[in-house]
Length: 579
Image (cartoon, rainbow, N blue to C red; front, side):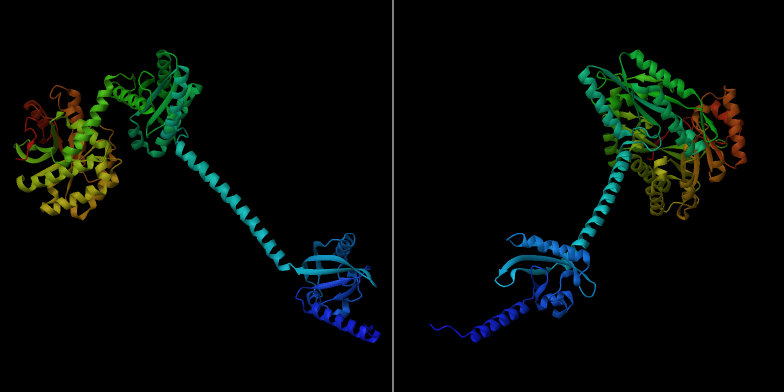
């Protein structure tokens, strides 16, 4: 075959070169070629667009001519690395375009051998500027998120620690609370069981704390509670733990070897409690009743020990305030009776087995009945005739007192409607829990409207001890339009710690002198003197006086001489059913 003329070969070569250049320029990816002196000998359109420069500006130039020195040095270093190896290398490089924009580029470089030019370096570029920007923003966002999470984690940790503290610490004394005591007592039991040791659970209840709270206010009461807690800790030291488990109740866990040690601990407790407390410019004296249950003989679990310590404390308070009592098995019967009675009492109230009896209140001048007191009575098939003081105390602990109160109100207004003459009234005894509950006021209004009785024919009796705390509730009832005219009596007057200013603030209608001042009449000169003072005070405050517990003609006659006109008691009439 004849060889092609040189001219044709040249033309063909030029065509191929033009084709190659056209192909290179049509690529969207920036491409460049450098010779061994790092001069650009070929750039495609995409590279020119990327750098913001024309082909003429860059061909024949080295990187230092149009890039910052720092960027050019990196490019040159990477070029040298490519020349040093026979394989392609990939690196991240930065180049600043003609507009001053710093570009982040992924550059793939590889060296090819040319017969005339020798080794030439070909580079293919991927612009990763946006990707790097997103990556930077993502990293910054992650860093911020991490800081936020760290802050939130710390906040949650703080909240967790606070909640843990609140769940286990009494806020007033900063001692263990009831929940933490249960955990501590469980630990005492586990340790004592394995070691064959003993410990005592001591239940301490402050005597007459309510009186201090009422007389001096809650700030003084709280300060006293805190001071008592501090003193108990000093007594116990490392021998045990102290917890506040109720308003005026503390529980102590104390290790001991024999009963003499516990006797010593209780003796020290009474000693430090007898020392006066100075609180908010008030000097206060306090005493306590203590019940003691021992592990393992009095109980082998927390609940049983606590119940038995409570039962022993109840006996101590009942028999001798300011004393202590070790648990005895017989006390369990008292607790069992209370629990069983609670169940039967609920059924009795629900089925209206409880009866309301009415005892007359008489005008001693003419022996005419002026009113009645409504009194609850319960004669159960299991327990027999139960004392009101016993079943009402059980009802007070739960919501039963509310339902019992509603039953009494219903029976009282029916009695007024059917049996009372104009001007006669019926008084009902009301507990603090009833007074504070919204249902009490609503029940009064509903029953009065239903029977259409005059509110003045209904009287509410509150004991002297609750006057201070119940001031706002009684005042609300006094101001209730639908109850206008309803009477208010102070019951058991003379037995409590009366704040006499309350008698001026609240519009009471009468005082009921407690039977304890009546039973020794007419022989007790002390009682006569006290009744004279009560009569004088009532006269100054324009209050009627009713004497309770009048059982003999001599008592009635003595009361008449002292100016007490209204009397109530077995002498005048026993409580009887409405029919």
